[in-house]
Amino acid sequence: MSEITNTPNAPYYAVIFSSLRTDGDNGYTEMAQRMAELAAQQPGYLGMESAREGLGITVSYWESLDAIRNWKHNAEHREAQRLGHQQWYSSFRVRIAKVERDYGI
Image (cartoon, rainbow, N blue to C red; front, top):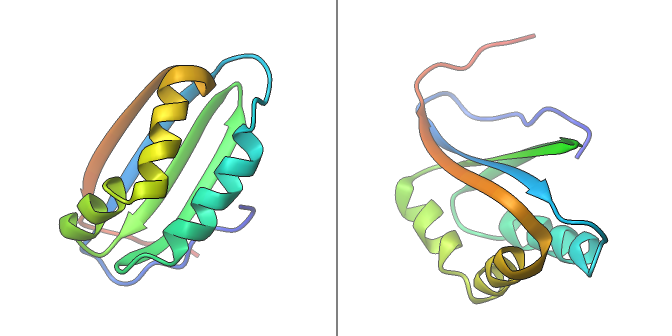
């Protein structure tokens, strides 16, 4: 993802996923691409931004907490979560925040 997401007027929600990877790809790149494609198909999805330079940070934007909950429980996403816990991440943190203000150029 190389662009800043064009989000609607606030309020909306952000899921902030910070992670440290384990060594090796082990299928991670393919699954990350699939998750980005699948998330974009979910009701309530607004966009995503991601960066990695050692520490990885991915922020996905959602219309509601229900949309986030439904994404968390998506079957393919659950499998990616399981693999992440078992082999792709040495450490991670998920934060969910309500965006109250949004501005920029």
